[in-house]
Amino acid sequence: MKVPTIDLEAAEHDVSMLAPLSAACRDHGFFLLNNHGMDDAIATMWQASHAFFSQPAEIKRQVMRTDAIPLGYYDRELTKRRRDQKEVFDFMRSRADGSDVNQWPAAPSNFRHAMTVFFDAATRVAERTLSLVYRSLSSTQGGADISLLPPGEARTSTVRLNYYPYEDPLTGAESEGIAPLGDMALHHHTDPGVLTLLLQDMTGGLQTLSRQDGWIDVPPRAGMIVVNLGDTLQVWTNDVYRAAVHRVVPMNQLEKGAAGRYSTPYFYNPKADAILEPLPALLSGEPVYRPFTWREYIRGRVDDNYTDLGEEDIQIDRFRLSA
Image (cartoon, rainbow, N blue to C red; front, side, top):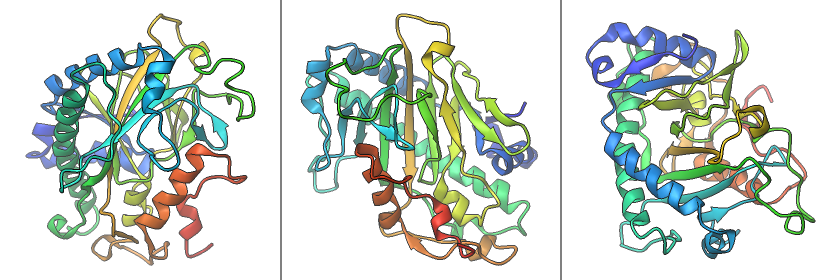
C-alpha cells in the first residue's frame, strides 16, 4: 500500500516494521496507525463533536474565536488565501496554573470532559509515534541515539474538530466581503508542527501529494489513526522526511449524505522556545535550513488563517539557506 498500516504495539518491538514507515515518510509523509489503545477516547470524542456541530449557528458562534482569542469555533477559515468549506473548533490543554485559555461551549454537557480525555490520550500516542518515527530514521541514518532527539510538547499542542458540510456554512449575507469558497473543501497545505494524529470518519476525501505518484487517496479505515508529518520534523530531519502536503476534495465530489464529513486532528507541536534547525545527530550532509524559532513560525502561520494578508502564509522554504 502507498499509505502503509503500522501496528504501534508490534512496531515498538519489531525493527523489521520500520522499513515501510520510513519509505512513506520519505515519499509523502503519511501512514496509518492501529493497535493504539485510544478506541474509547475516540468514540466519546466523536459523540461530543457531532453533538456540538449539530447545533444552530447562533449557538456555536457564542464561542466564536477572534484575533485576540484564537481558540473556539470558526466558520470562515482561509487556506492558501481561499476560504475552506468547513467549520472548526480549536482547543488546547489548560495551563499549569489552572487558568484556561479555551472557550468551552455550554452544550453538550460532557464536551469539555470528552475533549480533555481525548487530548491526554492523543498526547501519549503522539509521544510513542514520534519515538517510532525517530527509530525508523535512525535505522537508516547511522544509528542516532533517539533519546537525544527533541520531543514534542503537550502545552503547545492543539486539537481541532472539523466539520465539512455539503453546502457553504455561511449564508449569502454572511459571506459578503470575505473570501469566496475555493475549489477544495480544504486547500493543499502542510501542518507546521512535529506530527499530526488525525481521526477521520468513513466519508473519504483526504489526499496527499506523493513524490512518486502525484495526488493519492489516504483512505479511511475503521479504528485507525492517520499520522502525517509536519514542517518541524522536515526541518529537523534536513528534508530526509517530508512534511505531508495534503488536501480535502470538494464535498460535491463525494457521495452526498446528511451528516457531511467529520475529522479531528491532534497537532503535536514543539516546545514554545524550540529552535527549528536540522539536528546534528541526524545530519548526513550540509544543513539546508538556517535556524528559526517556533514562535516566529507559528505566528506567521496562524495570522493568515483569519485574514487574507495578500500573500501566501509562511512556509519553511523561507528559511532555506539556498533562499
